[in-house]
Image 1 (tube, one colour):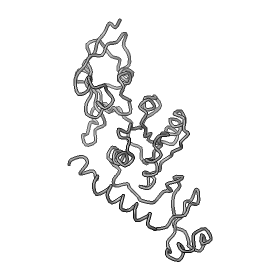
Image 2: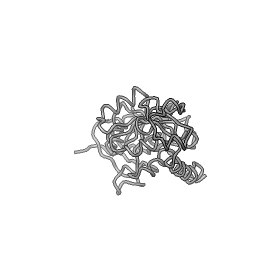
Image 3: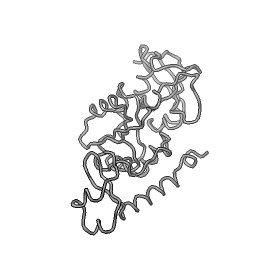
Image 4: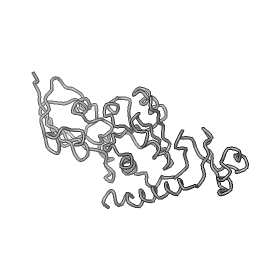
Amino acid sequence: MYEKTAQFRFYEELNDFLPADKRKTSFDYHFNGNPGIKDAIEALGVPHTEVDLIQVKGKSVGFDYQLQHGDRVAVYPVFESLDISPLIRLRAKPLRETKFILDVHLGKLARRLRMLGFDTVYRNDFEDAEIVEKAVNEQRIILTRDQGILKNKAVTHGYWLRSTDPDVQVREVLTRFDLFSQVKPFARCMVCNGEIEETDKNSIKDRIPSKTASFYDEFYICTDCNKIYWKGSHHDNMNDYLDQLIDNYEPSKTRGK
């Protein structure tokens, strides 16, 4: 039997994590003792990595605040354009270098992010514990469709993808982390994530088809797996994809500015 009650209200995209009857409205949360407010928020289904500001009775509080009977709690997501520095901002500061690690269900997204030039670690046999450990040790942002992994207390940077479509997921990531200006097409190997650099045609001539050698002079090689790239029809198709992505989903358009 619960003895205490607090009132919660979640704002904007945090409602994605809630059941329909709790979205965009205030609702009662029943509890015993004085649990940490972070535990209460995650018990309601919202990962702490998605939360940027908590206010209790109009006052900003941290994750260590202990919930009290009668509290009125407002929970806000990441603020993209509002400076809330005078308040208790809960998310860690953005990482200096944008690097990702993806869960096992996001192989297609991994290839797309690498094509855009982002350092993206992915394996289809990663365990959740491995993902968290590498994210912490290598300062990587976790991208996942599994909300549970983002509730791990060790995780500081992560994002739960709303869409299951890899093309839409790319747009989500670019918009969520404001990365349009950091796109560097074809800077990374889509297979292994290694960096790509230009290579001398003569040094790899025995590894490419003779017709390819006769039509193209510029070649590139992955510094990790040695995969060879050249600007064939596949390159033109990827350029068309990138043009559509950037033209149709630049920040000014996606954010309605």
